[in-house]
Length: 175
Length: 175
Image (cartoon, rainbow over all chains, first blue to last red; front, side, top):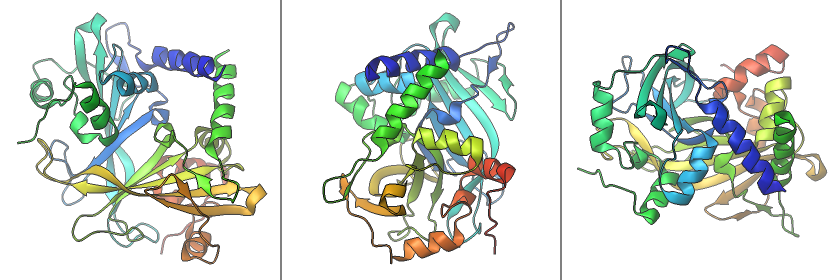
């Protein structure tokens, strides 16, 4: 019974993960903050950083895709990865060092959809709707070349690395 | 129907969030990485840091408690917050600056359970089982004094701050 409930929820979640407007723009999944968290980084070189105040990046994936990846080491069709970029701050409340996350700076999506030509990037900024980033953009070639699994940066998501290595889908990207 | 499924799943999740051994030790929730992510910080002063390699802290909460907090600004009984401390590294794969998360350094739980005297801390380290941290420990008095909502550090979890402020449960802790 519990399995049936979880499966039903996963189906419901999947059907909500990708919504497009008539002209092909993508709608930001409303509940992505309730999806599975993969990891966060800070001040990584591919994110913009405002003078000495490095951004955090949080990575979320729709739960159905996560479950499938943990089983197979591969992303199923309809996978949606959400990159949430947040500003950071240091002396907040009782915290005296290090950095904590504050407001959203921008959101991007990386989406696998065979009905739309495979993987695609969408840049939301602070909007709820995003147009496709043209497939000539650098993000496509960089992810193609340096993504550890199927053009995604699994090398930065500790819980996925192990699953991918077990299934033989992990490509080393160390230099 | 979808609401019924979600409610059923939430009940199932809640019932799994807290499991204790006969002598009162707590079992680490096996699926906490699929819970709702609240935020992460890096190098915050209340976490131990190994020489120049600051740790990340990821905060997760069981989904039923999250849903309730977003509605009411308050934590229900049986809330479980999991603090996952991870080491960090910098020059990983194509990343040339900033820091990414690597292996787990330690796990702690902060648990609300009226059947066990209210909020309690459990220090798992790298184990799956943790004894209660004695209620005379500093973590209790610090959270009591400086927690923005009900002894929890909501001041560090951006998506919760707004909900708490709307419901009037937020206590300012800026100094």
